[in-house]
Length: 338
Image 1 (cartoon, rainbow, N blue to C red):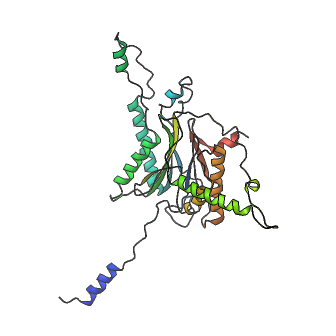
Image 2: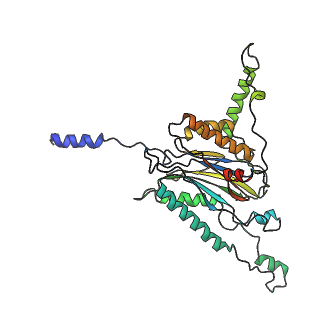
Image 3: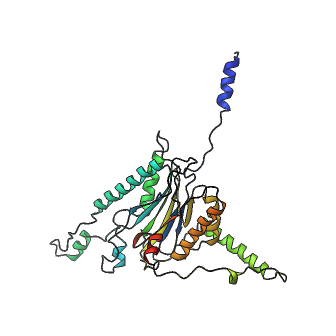
């Protein structure tokens, strides 16, 4: 069979047509998250380029949405931490990507959490104290131990993953990356025993630091010894950021991308700026960080982005803290305490 020249050229054009490389939906947005002792700190830039363009359209965008503030939970149970941990906890979701997809997704998540609240009976002030049964065994069986009400950060992360994955192969996929953080009810009050990527990276950095310190102790005269004594330590944790914790709650941070991948991480990042932020996080993160140390680490990441990243945000980043008290804006909290 003979092939004509026009059909050959058309075939070559289709085969050699340039394809767009797969890349993160976060793009120029920068989104960071850190898990501390009893809290989750999230930070994001406040700039928007209107769909990934080169022109800055807004510099006051709040990319950390408060899905539920957890208000009215702490202290409402008379100091019973076990019962307080069963209430609806605060959840914050950081988003990076298409602004329209983010707005629709945040509205869906808020509505879903509110529906789960009503299903769990949160806000109902009627409780059964006696159902007429004399046998205490039957009465206790009729009223089993309470279960966590509403949705926590882990359940919301899996719901977000379902929403993203179900629309990935549709005509309107969600061009969106998320960080879901909050407090999750846990029966084990001990420390987290899971060993992940962050723990392995921290171990490698610790071994490399020990080797470097051992070499610096034998430096010849005239050279600068950069040991721990010369490193500037973070200031003492201010009373503004000191808050009591609940042993029945554990902080968790979940990383989701536009393909529906879900990871439970100790620290995470989205966007092109994550290439610079991860190096700072790998070196400075610890599992037992205080709130002040976590906030300073996030600010150090954004400081490195201002020095090395070609795209700079004209305004400082937005940083929020999620704990048993709810979701608070760190910058506003420090301003009120001055």
